[in-house]
Image (cartoon, rainbow, N blue to C red; front, side):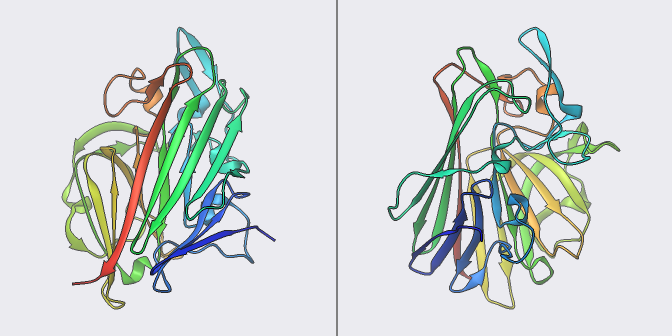
Length: 292
């Protein structure tokens, strides 16, 4: 049975699954699922939970290949027959619980490996208030040289078919047939969610830039809304098919395949370069309220 760490504060309750990539098994407000809930009787994978961490990079690295520090690197393709390296490997490892306070703190330490050639440590903190959850993800470079790194969160909002979404970003990267970004354009009308609208199934899985840092999902029939905020200018907006009935709005520190498009450390869309002994962090808050 999967071990869950549960916390409640006011109307907010969570469960965290250290064994499943340090994922958030569920987020509930007044008993309503805000994120897709983990199914204890189903497959035991982080990407079937409510949200999971992306570390030490977000999204795809094309064919697992990149150049950094004057040499070529090959990292493992870590998701079955998927052609690219995907979402780092933090979501595929067991995390360790560090305390039993009102918040939940998890840590993970990884050596250099075929998945990522430099050692690192990560910390996640899940902090509750009576109406919100704040997640903090921190990467710490354990190598003795500067290395590239990136972070993200991958939340899945529940009950997409009963929801409306507001999401504003000025630009978006188009993807090629290999699901890799090739051209940045102004956000087209078909992906314009500046005004609330119902999510269109199977319509988008792209990285948006110049994001305002806020997205709102509301469920009019239930009379509730959730406001997501983060401190990064990029977000992946993903609406899969109706069979999954979720909407993913993923704050990320860099765009998809950034390490092959930009020199690390070169701008808001690039991966960061983290010096030895230094860290990189990302925050995401989800605040629940009655629908006005």
